[in-house]
Structure formats: C-alpha cells, structure tokens
Image (cartoon, rainbow, N blue to C red; front, side, top):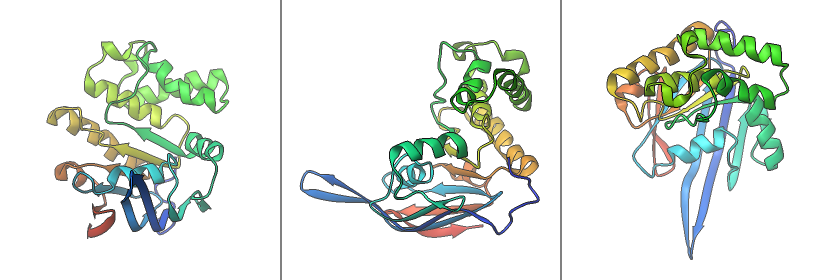
Length: 235
C-alpha cells in the first residue's frame, strides 16, 4: 500500500477524452462522452451520478475490465486503453483491488480462504498467504471469524472480508462499487469507517462509485457525472 506521505500531486489514474460507445441494433449509445478524470496517489475520490450517467462504465475503464472506444487511460503511468485482455487481466490482478456491492465472496470458502485466493493467482508463497490473510482479518476486526464461511457472517462482516480481500495483493488502487448498497445505514457507516481508516492511516488510493450523497461525502473529492461526462466537482 502506498505510504500516506508519498504522492500528493502524483497522478495514479488519468483518463483523457475517453469515449465508450455501444451499438444497440441500429442505434449508438454513448456511455462515456469525452470523459477527463485524474486521481492522485493517496486520494479518496467519489464518483456520483444518476442511473445511466456512466458511473459503472467509468469504473470498468479504471478497473481494466473494459477498454474505451477512443481516448487514453493511464494507470500508474501505463496507457491501458489499447492493451489485450490477457494484459489487462494481469494488471487487474496486480494493481486493482475490487470491493463489490454484492460482496462476491465464494460461499464454500472460509473468510481466510477468500482473502488468500487472489494471492494464489499472484504466486505468493503459501506461508505468506496465511500470514497476510490473518493480518488483514485483524485489520478489519474479524480475526475471530477467519474460519467462518460467508453464510455464517452478517452483511457488514462479509463486506469487511471483501475489503480485506481487496487489499490482499497490496493493490495500487482500490475500486469500491456501491460498497454500502446492500447494507443498512448503521452497518454501511461501519464499512465506511474502515475505508476512511485505510485512506488516512495506510495512504490507500480509493475510487468509489455511489449514488448516496451521504456516503460520497467521506471522500476528499466528488466528481458528478451526467451523460458520460463530468458536470460538477466538489471538494
């Protein structure tokens, strides 16, 4: 994880004139229309906007899940806009930590095993996988639940496991897609406390998509999208 004293003013993500166009029958739908966006190392950014504004498409671009129709996307200095899927997959595994609204934990694995899984794909030695997973469970206050499967955990506990899993390979950027969307307000507040803690104490770079203005205010900056472009900015 980045040192919190590093990188202020260092761009870690940069989108330049990014367009994403989908063909729907004879019609073209522009999900992104010349999007320009920059995220500094160690910054906590929220992306807001109404349904259909391009929030999820923008997240997919930053997360190396899709490539733009045109434009440039720089992640840690590398233009990922023209890479092949195999190269994108490698970058995702090494540089991006994902936190999903629906948790996306594997139900047959324990909390600890879920956290260890991305480390297996990165070839991290077994002893180190165990040690790191246990450290991350302590970080999210779930050391006493490491052998529990997702079905034995509350929604808030599952999301904290998902946060720990996102940190497993020490990613460059954490992407959180509606991280409180399936939680009640109290539990969602607890999850946001952990994200703020990661940002302030560990220097994590976090990009969060949310429709909830109250949740968005946890960030350093809010970018508001409409029709695939930024129309407002709040700090």
